[in-house]
Length: 151
Length: 151
Length: 151
Length: 151
Image (cartoon, rainbow over all chains, first blue to last red; front, top):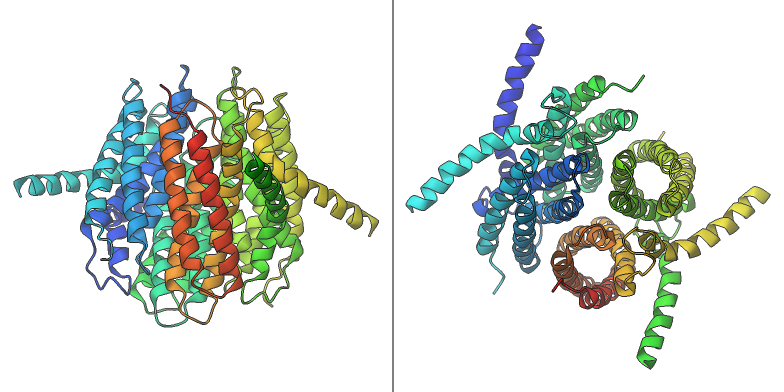
């Protein structure tokens, strides 16, 4: 019992810390020297969440009684693009700036499309997914603007 | 400027909220009725983080001057298994309990192996990755114990 | 027109060659020296296919008129596990034998479960998916038996 | 022994069949009615291969004695984008034409960039990867041109 309480407190601390930990991890890359690109770090963080929430929304849609096929398709596609873009966004070895910027710009449009589809439904999971997609799209655009291509 | 400050505050709020949002999303699944399996929700959350942090550690290892090949291999493999297990952990449509439980148990062992490899190095990214892997392994084991197979 | 025919012939040749190319690629790894583990190469090849065919079956199931929720769940989960296992199966840098063998053994059981679920339906995509899963499970078991753990 | 020979023959037949099976699977989707978009089916097939071969090239690069960091980065990123695009390319439930077309167009550029990087090296795995990327880029462009947006 005590152990459980202790574990719960520990876990709460961990959750807090986790919110920072993708950026912290990137800061430890030997070529980054602690100077993380903040908008790109934010995007990396939200892309990870958005990918999983789109997957969860698609799964919830599959269990709804009404026909949610279009929303399933759009959420599954958005999950895949966010997943891939989120992986690109954490890498700092070498340089792939043009690809990264285009990925972020494209992903923002995919998130826009997913938010628009989810907005069409009253399901709470669709509303939450739409909100996440809008915030992720904004983060992707900010991050894309921050990525400099080599001259 | 003001807008930036406002956005930063907003973002901080969002980070807090995000820490809860995978579980919140699962709670909105039509078959879940708000009763989320807490250990499984925690595992879903940490698996998402652990996958990305192992990927980031592998990327940082590739930029280190010393030979980090073994750590790259183990981190990349762990990222892939955490990624897959994390996807299974959010799905609530239908039932795939035996597969889910085995995935969580297997993933815990993969995280153990990754933590052990990362522990061999002094790089801060390896230390952070090892910590994440240990916590993720614990969450996976707790979650596996909470998944009931149909009688 | 001629160009199109030429391209078709070229493509046919490419398809043939592709069937061999995952193994060919692995054979070119600097630590492999051309001696590919044949069962592991076969598994790498089929895991790639099986992941994509399970995804396709889940997508087709979502468009069927009858309730295919359980099959969608099982196919999506199988796609994710095959995907992850397939990635592990191509890596030859460093050594992660125990994880690889367990991944192959686990994946075989996931494929068995997916084949059993797909076998319950008359849809042609389910039948094809079940067949693929059975063959993939067999390849995974052969490959697992071929992976030696370091003494 | 005989069984092994039989199995090998069977496997050879399976390899042949597999080359066709992604398209065959798509043809069985209830909304497709057997009329597969051929360029899109080809792209789905090659994206699957290209994703895995870029992953394999990155893994082989990590084991080379010379500094292959830039090639590892570009191959890993290309693998992720091909993976995501390949998943989008097999889905036929609902409609997400604009996203699919943009994904294919973007992926073609990522494959171009990966081919250009791999072309800089003498390693046989880089040469094979570059060839695969060029063919995949061509397939993606053909497929993008074949995807019609709804009027």
